[in-house]
Length: 151
Image (cartoon, rainbow, N blue to C red):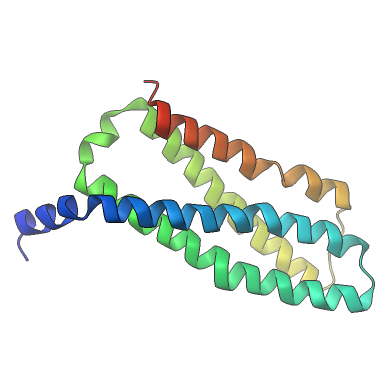
């Protein structure tokens, strides 16, 4: 496939990539909002509850959050590749910075999940309640940049 043919393919499928990107972001956000809530419950759970929560946390991260994050990145990058002019907009730089921050939060949550699995969590439930709000703030920034394109 030549570069021109690839570009035409990307442009012809732009709306498909956009729809798949939005679906992936919704699934990713669901996990980012739910996992720290599970951590809150995990802090207060007894041994039996903790074992069940570990399974839920691991499955949420591995089977929903990780694939959704990867898909969101792939389809987002395909859209940028199809329309590189997007990178000349300041709002896109803010959005991408927030997406990178969201990815960092995702990986931080993954580390915390592993600390629960090893029985090494030292943080109180309130800590996770506060961190539960971080993806929400980032989501607000991302959506406002993408929808309003303020600069």
